[in-house]
Amino acid sequence: GLLRSDSIPEVGEDAAATVGMAETLSEEEQDELRKELAKVEEEIQTLSQVLAAKEKHLAEIKRKLGINSLQELRQNITKSWQDVTSTTAYKKTSETLSQAGQKASAAFSSVGSVITKKFEDVR
Image 1 (cartoon, rainbow, N blue to C red):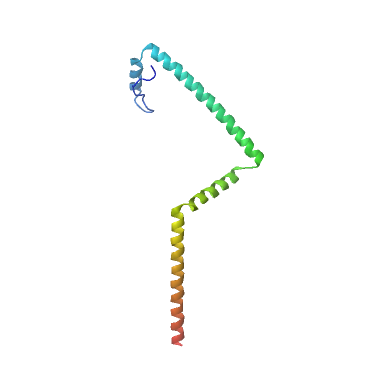
Image 2 (image 1 turned 180 degrees about the horizontal axis):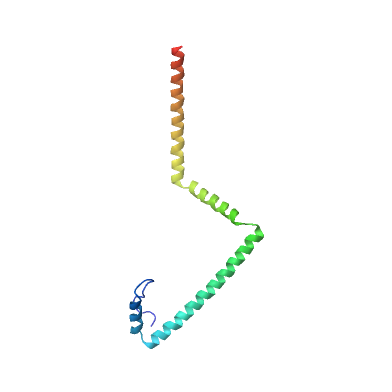
C-alpha cells in the first residue's frame, strides 16, 4: 500500500523516472495515492486559509495595541542586542578591551609625564 519502500523523486529529478514508477503501481495503488493526494492538497488549502485568518487577526490586535512595524523593529533590535551582550564571548571581549584601554591610557599618561619632565629639564 502506502508504505512502499520505493523512493519518491525529489523536486528537479528526472520526470521519466517518475513516469516509470507510476507504471509499476497497480491501478488500485494509483487510485489510493490519488485520493491521498487530493486529501493532502485539501488539508494544505485549509491550513493556508487558517494561517491567513490568524495573520489578519494578529494584524488587528497589533493595530488595536498601537504596535507598528517600526516599534516591532526597535523591539527586535533591542532584544537582539541584549542577546548579544549577554553572551560569554561578548563579556570576555568587552572585558579584554576595557583592560587594554586602561593599559593604553596608563601608557600614554606615562609617556606624557616623561615628555613633560624632559621639557622641564631642557628649560
